[in-house]
Length: 195
View (tube, helix red, strand yellow):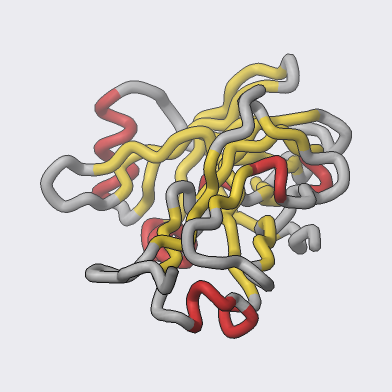
């Protein structure tokens, strides 16, 4: 269930501040920084096209990366923020946090629904209303799940799926104490009960 660790290549950026960041953008890079793990922050620059491709692939903020910087040891990082241009919605800066495989971090994990055809409520014309497509979980950095799975087998119209109804991956815990709703099977418009 855990994902493979994806390599992300970056270069050390010389200089900090607006001028150095603008220069990196002019050269076809996205400026960034890596911090954490009781080590000094390191300014970076990442290839613009490679970063854009990773962002468009999805789940960028919940993926563990193996950051490769020339002249430095590889380090595992998680993206903690992507600043975007307000008009073009393209990345202008990225923040990464160094982590160890045994440290616990909080991430939003994607929810996947399976066995739609085994749900009597959906067969009768009900609609699956997804309340939370992503759930915030505390997970081990070395074992970040790709997704959590919700089985729709036997779900009737009016059934509500809560977080406590789902078997979470080993080592993952919810960050909110209450039993919140993930999804429900709603009645179709104009549905009249058979009774």
